[in-house]
Picture (cartoon, rainbow, N blue to C red):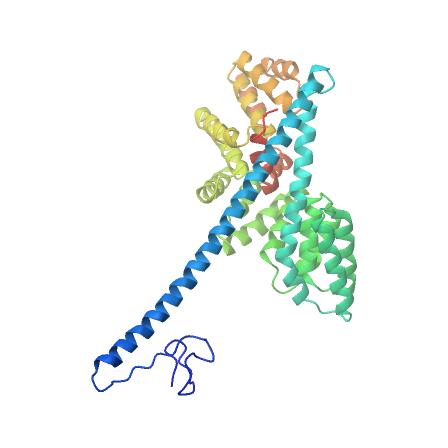
Amino acid sequence: MYCQRCGKRNKPEAERCRYCKAPLLVVRQERSGEGGDLQSLLGIEEYVIDKISTVEKQAHRSSEDVDLLVQALDFLERNVMVTRAGIHVLVRMLRERGLLAASEFHVRWRQRTLDHLGGITRKERFLEAKAQILSAFGGKNRRKFEERVLAAEDHLFNLEAAPGAAALEEAAALDPSNAPLHAFLGEMYLGLKDLQRARRHLDLALAGREPTVGALKAWGLLALMEGRNAEARKVLGGLQKKSREDASTLSLLALAEALCGDWKACRRRAEQSLSLEESAAALFLLALVHLREGRIAAAEGRLDQLLASSPESVPALRLRARILLARGWWTKGREALERLKMMDPSADAESEVAVFRGLPAAGRRDRALSTLDAGEVLDMWDPVTEEADVFLRQVDL
């Protein structure tokens, strides 16, 4: 006798399949014909009822799981609300007593948020790279290598960057030719702004036959950070041909084109990036392109779009203020500079206005165009910065 569900063979006298436990339906023609048909239908009915009962139980269990998830989210929402209320009270008390400077508070809070989100990003990136790192092992002592990798994982989960990097350095010493490990360390040191160590590990990562996309992008980013713009343009251009749908690579390439003086190519790359995904860096570069072309309204439109998503962007606020001053709108320009000062305490409104007043029209435009700073654009490009802007925009203190 064969099971109607799984098709496996069972003993003739069996009532249920010994493999999948489904009822075995025996259809045989009795003398009257009617009894056999009735028995067959009853067997099928029992089987269907059993399946329906199983589905109902699973649906009920899923409903209970969803209810528990909703309760957990509700608790989390209330917990965050209470914490935020406490922060509001604390900030208000400190301001009333003159113990808290608004600009300093925002700058420090933003930096703390960036540090924390950077740690989370490193942890997530390590989880993506871990399997490749372990599978690429070519050293002698695998057990000790895995111990160091697991120790690094523990540190990164606790957002402890320095001990995590130290453990991975020990792992790299046990397997000097592990390209995925060197690529991750290079990316990690780039995020920590340790360019010397980043360069050393990325050199080793790129020495392999087939460098990863992540290693190539990190090398292009490093070249931009060190001012090697032509090299960055070459590396990122080659990478873009391999991954045409990568908006972040296109934004980096747009910056490299601008720094090399090819503003037409910059515009093309920035527009390609924005067609895939909105990017603060691409919007800022397009604003500069429009300004160079004398299209002031288009430049201001791009800045409005940027500031709508990143209202605390220092480069965007500075460029907006300088465009207003270049047009001779002194009052509005001064107001924009005062807003900038909340994010950048070093901004001097009166000094900037005085500089623009002393320049001819062409000089004012050139002064506005001098806003391009590679380091600032790279900060805008950083996904961690964009994520921090999303969170900080939701809290108004």
